[in-house]
Amino acid sequence: MQVIAIANQKGGVGKTTTAVNLAACLARAGQNTLLVDLDAQGNASAHVGVDLTEDKRSSYTLLVDKTADPATCIFPVFPNLSIIPAPASRALAEVDLALVSAIERERRLERALKRLPTQPDFVVLDTPPHLGMATLNAFLAADLVIIVCQTNFFGAEALGRLLLVLVDVADIRATRQRIRVLATMHRANVRANRQILQELQERFPDELFKTVIRYTTTLHEAAGAAQPITEYGNGCHGHKDYLAVMEEFLNEQTATTGIRSRA
Picture 1 (cartoon, rainbow, N blue to C red):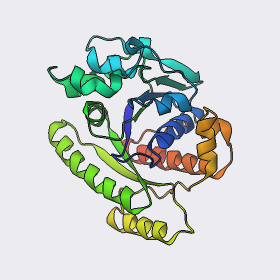
Picture 2 (picture 1 turned 30 degrees about the horizontal axis):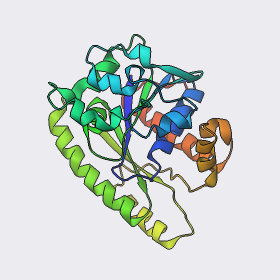
Picture 3 (picture 1 turned 30 degrees about the vertical axis):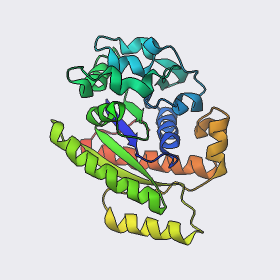
Picture 4 (picture 1 turned 90 degrees about the vertical axis):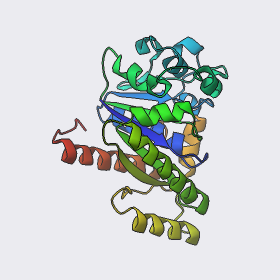
């Protein structure tokens, strides 16, 4: 089981879009994939057409109840893809308060995932756009953190701040964590976007995915239709881009572990 956290402290940069569509591409490639919605807004849940649910059958309960059975929180989406949705209440937005006196509160999600009766090939965590207990739990549970970065000035600034946080996380973790950067919402015809992308390529030559997610309205339309891009826009630019990210990621997995994926 590989756990992937999709993160950025800035909202509106394609974080949830990436979490949902990467998970969907992995699932369509034959990988058993679990998507976990840790954002109180519940956008990942809505994106795959799953209604927000009661607290005890949501990601919230995995954070506040250290004995919770994660299997009771899983909802199927389509073959090979399931989700643990966000709660319908505001509970997830107030999870920091709920955990204020909890012991080892930052490890709740990691331990809950280990209690899954059947472990998926991949777990994709959609994190909230701020640093709180839900995000910290995701970072400590993740083998890989993918930082999405819209190719504009503010996206690049947020990337720098998040990298500093992950340096502190590395001091807590027992094992080494991989970090990758994914450029999103890129408009190649905009000079500022091209400049930021070039800066990312120069600054993060090893961490930056070669694939760039192009800006396309089809990705927004897919979210509005409550479908991943694999179902809504098969063959469109957004679908091709996320397929390429998935293939790049799986090829790296094979090179690192020596285990060939089922894709």
